[in-house]
Amino acid sequence: MPRLLVDAGNVLFNHAERDSKDSIETITAKGISEIYGAMNYHAVAVGPFDLAAGLDFIRESGETGIPWVSANIYDEKGKRPFKPYITVNTGDLAIGVVGLTDSETTVNKNIEVRDAIVELGTLIPEIAVNHDMIIVLSNLSHDRSIEISKRFAEVKVVVGADRRKGNITPLLSNDAVIMQTDSLGKYLGVLSVSWFHAPWKVDQTNKLAQLKNHLKSADRQLDQLSTEKDKTSQGYKNKALILERNKEKILTEISAIETAQKAETLGLTPSTFDADMIALERSLPQDRKISAIVGSIKDQINSYKIGQAAASNRQ
Image 1 (cartoon, rainbow, N blue to C red):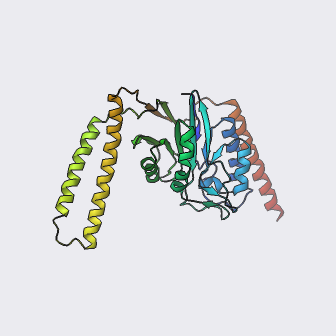
Image 2: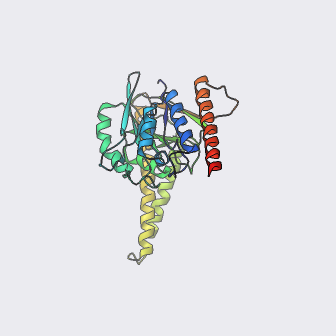
Image 3: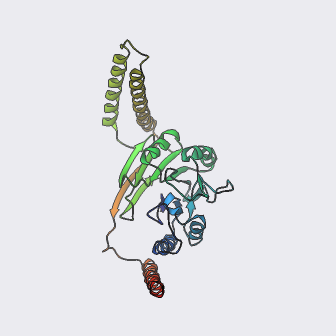
């Protein structure tokens, strides 16, 4: 599959709010926008930190080359200011790339960030009809990314950006590959995919056996709980709820593995994936165009500092 360059968001700023649109941070953010444009990214999800300088600022950054996507951001008129998803045609495949923005972080008052999973649910039927694969760029929590994989079988890859997690090597959840790289450009994540419209091939014989043992254990605990006399107490209800949810999770994982195994026995060519987390070091060769942009950013920051110092001396 040809190269697809994406980012799950929170690339422009390190915080959700900026006190001024004229600062070193905004100069840097504009430079980052130019760099992303020069690198020809296919899609970048809008993160709450990206909105720190306001909607107009991030729209301008889109004009310099960042292909922003967000399915759950709405402006004061109740309209999406960004594309909810884009289509990338690679070879014979049409890939739908959706952006989801974290709603738990404070953002600009003129922006409404709706529930990401609800908004994704409204788009899935539309995207699935015309695309061979759906990729979600999510700066939601890792737990919410896993929830996406369990609720939408059409989603085959989730690229995360949960800053609390760092690198997440690819894991398979309900036939969706979930991964992310650490923040601040420390790593380059490379996911190599061979897609054949079939479940992912992963040797999970041992894991399946472990899950079935866990299932037996869950059933035993439920049977034991059923012998308690007082089934109306809150303690009993809480225990029963936890055990039932755990059993449901185990059954979901077993089903995903058995579905993939069944596809192989039917002679279907399984889809495959492999990943690398490449640590980025200063010793790596520099791209001339990117180096020129970085140099320009440094010059602008120096000019800004000189201007601020001169203004301070005049006061």
